[in-house]
Length: 484
Image (cartoon, rainbow, N blue to C red):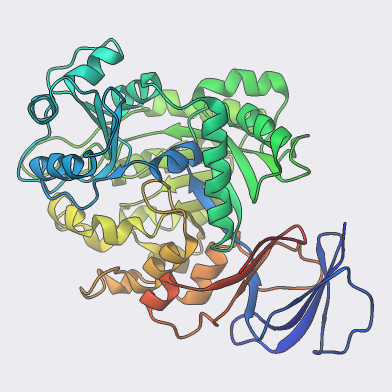
């Protein structure tokens, strides 16, 4: 592997100017500027930029993110009718006969309800599939329902129905999807991303092995195991953390994913208190009597469980299950927590895998549907102060695969002109960066050379400036994957 010399970089936040040497994919020296005399196959001048550990997206869905980057955005819709109007504006040049796909709507605050008849009136006979921002709702036209051989009274499918229908929809050829994913990872590298945990609901090990045979990925990828693949994964002998043969060491086996509940926007997050006006507490996808045996079996075979839990009751159930099994693991999202459950993450040695960009996106929906409880929603400061390990991700395509967006949200608790939402739950920049870097808090000799060089020091920047952070270079295993 070639040696690399990074000249004139500031090592860490407000760090000293130095030259940093990389050899065989590892940081081998941090020296006074110009002090080194040894040969380096490649020299990069950092021009005084800040060198930080490479950024990790701890939760993304890469095929969906890659596809959503090419779909009609509906995030600006304020009603079901408004969503259809946005769709119509973008369809002027769309070929007739193709499946129309829109993404990103949030119906939790809409004054009207989505319905298949609304799509039929606007686009008679067209197959239309519209995905909510949280991926837990799929709104289909009558023609789209017919396309997948289903009938449904409203065309609005939730949770398991949504996911099975999504799988049945026609998709681009595999080679096209693979090209889209490669483009998406290259775009992530431009934002300083050196590693992604891929939570795609598919055989990610097989998919990434195939992709790596064509081209080396632009980042490291951890391949999450879906529930339906548990038996096959055990038969393969794969364990979380194993390095796969493909990908030149960049591909590893990830955690084992399970769902306890749904989402806030869909009002299926499972809560101790009912949703206002509905009398319902959300949807329990996996009761304890099913969750505990799955955790135990995964743990016995070397697979780390990653449990999706958004509502406070779902988080209680997940924490209870981990306590009963006594295994390490992760809780994905952890959006609403009872105060007494917060210290249990650290006590049980669990990772709180959170997505800070969801907080400003969801603040209005949370104020309505979790009214009176939002002081314990997206409670990152409380988790951090309790000793829990935080890891930040995007949940792309729910939010963009851009760690600076999440870092800014974690620090600032807003993404518009409104005051921060529950600013007492904001976390310091150094902690947000560490949670976005797999726990690394600086660049040290002996570290794996997964690095990002920023043109500006993040210290003291506004949340807007953090979101727009200029990245000069991204380095994975000692090799540049992006140069500005």
